[in-house]
Each structure stands twice: as C-alpha cells, then as structure tokens.
Length: 474
Image (tube, rainbow, N blue to C red; front, side):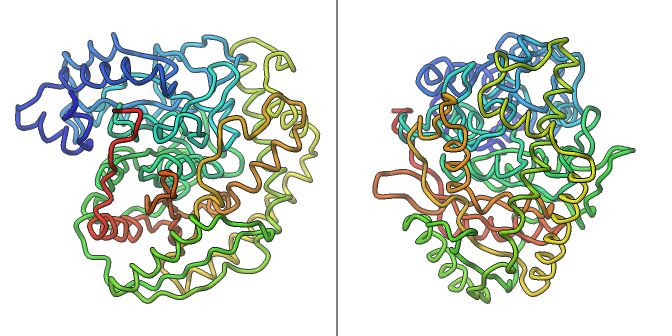
C-alpha cells in the first residue's frame, strides 16, 4: 500500500494492464490511506468506499486509467447517486441524479471515484476552510492552508491518498492549491472540457474543470480522456494536433519566454515566490530557450472592478440555481458571511452593468492576446506568498472586507487567465526555508496546452521534481 502511494496514475494503470495488480487492490490502498491520513488532513468530506469497491470488482471500461482511484471535488462535477454540497449548508445532503459529461468521460477512462474532496463554499475562496466541514490542512504543515478552491484535491494528491484528483478553476482554483501543496496543476483553455449538461456560459466563461496530479503525463492523459465539446456548448477550444500525452515526450524546441514578478496593483511579492520565478527563468535559459523579462500589458489592473461584477453575478446565479434544485431559499443562516455578501452584491447589478463589465474584460483579453504574439509562454508567481496559516482569512464574518483584502493580496496573478481563457499551469519549483512548496505559473496562448505540456515535461525531467513525502505521511 505504501508503494502504491508513491506511483503516479499512469504507473498504476500500467500495473493493471500488465495484470500485476487488480483495480480492487489500488482502490483498497487508496481507502486505507484515506482512513489513516484524512483525520489529520480533512481533505475528503464524502467517502464513497462501497461504491468504489463495487466498481473496482465490476466491468470497468478499458480506458487509459483503468482501475486508478480518483477524487471528485465536491463542486460542479456530478456523479449519479453521490452527495454534492459545494461545501455549503444550503444544499443539505443533495444527491445527484445524473453524471455530468465530465464525470461520464472520467468513468469511461476507467477511473474509480473513491470520494469527494473538500472545497470552500461555492468555490469562492483561495483557502479551503468551509464552515460546514472545517478546514482542510496542508500535508507539509497541518497549521497551513491548502489553498482553494480545489484545496481538498491538492492535499489528497500531495499526501498520496490518490495520484490524481478533479479540480475546477474560475480564478486560480486549480493553480493556487497546486502551488501551496506542491503538485502539478493545469487550467486548460476555455471550452477544452465541456461543462454540460448543467452549465454553459458560467460567469462569462471564467469556469473550467480539469485536475491536479503528481506528474505531467497524468495531467495530459486525463485531458485526453475528457477534452472535447458537446453539441450546444457556448465555447469551443481549437482541437489539438495530436493527443496531449504525446506532447509529454516531445521536445519543446526553442521557445520565446517572458517572465515577471511584478504584481498587479503594486502588491508585494514574497521573496521565496519571486526567487522561484527568477530561478526557473534561468533554468529555461540554460535549457536553450529565449528568455526575456517583460511585464504583461499595462491596464491589467483595470480588470479588478469588471471581474468583481461578473464573478458576483455568476455566484448569485449559481446560488439561485441550486436553491431551486433543493427547494430552499438562500439566507444568511444557510450561507457563510462572504458568500452572503457576494450573493447580495451579485443580485444588485443591472443587466447593462454586467454587459459593460464583460465588454471591459474582453478588451483586456485582446490586449493580453497581443502580448502573446511575441511570446510562447509567460512566467510569473502563482501566489504572492507561500501558504498562509489557517485562519488568516477572518471567515467569521466580522470583517468581510478584510477577508476580501487577504484574497486580493495572496493571488493577484491567476484570475487574468480565466478572463482571457488561456491555459495556465502551476509547476512545483522550490521550497521556502520553512519547508513549504512554491509553485511558478506558466501561461500559454489560447488553445496551446501542447506547448505548456512539452515545457512542463522538460522541466520535470530537468529538475526531477518528485516530491519528498510530506510530514503528515510519516
């Protein structure tokens, strides 16, 4: 069981294909790890052990990840017959009546869902501390945040509970926890994975789904299994030239890379986070790439106001949608203070104001797209600081503005690529003196996950970034 926790998903799947291991053995190993470590981590909020065992001994599809244990984030993705809460008391113990398209494709790939991973309420925070379930804890330091909103998934992958887990990202929710927990996390291009059947134009295209993993090849294999539109989808990513997993073994060529550690709004960046970007830029130069220090276009700071409008309206719509499904009216009693504040804010914007905000974000997107005509990818910090202590966000509601201020200063780099729809990834690269992981964000052109995966695989090989075992694992 201990050996299984050190493998990535592709290695596990190969053991199943060769007949050396049966899917039920992998599932039992994951269950044992969850039972042993989750009391400390609080990463898994809905165990699904019996259904996982039944699937593992049944007729699993002969997909590329057959028999590999997997966690779904407790948000967005629906699996028929399982509880879905979005980390909120509003949904109670709602049980999904259908599989979302993404989950159908995950199951077709042969993955076995062993549970649901924790998320902040409705995925709106850069930390995973939902009032309903309590804080998820970082395996590198149990008093530190796992990030958010895919924090439970990141903690589980980092601690070896599962090799790969589902995540969603509408402002950094895959990349932030990947950076703080030391995993690989790719936010794909807008429209790469379908949000059908329940969602379409979620918050003007800010939301996407993918996963957090221990290796680049796992992320690429997962994306091959899930990518592709469904008829009626409002967005469509350019189809790849070949399978994404083939990019992992392909040389990236000589890339034109830019980098910057300057944060929007003049915010300070921790020395460890800035140092990681500079060192990664130096490594890229040593690997033969053309590397230039260059800031993204001026005017990026202008996205904050319009993004607040679009995000709050999107949240209000999402809360209203689920309130209708479960037959409960949203209230201060059923929502956390920040959720209630943003919900009321979202209800207050007029349609004209929403469309003006969308227009402003689209102007910024075109400016950023022009910048990427000169560069293949751009390097920056994921966050302005390594993982903060649990409790730093003042989530008791005494000062909602203070909570928003912490959010603003910790992750000013990520939301831009949700606005533009470009792919962006968090690559584990370095440690603080206190033993916390640091991630570097690398963003690419719209539709060009291929270049990012080739570069990530080159960096993975050059650095041998295989993680040591977190202290919680023992």
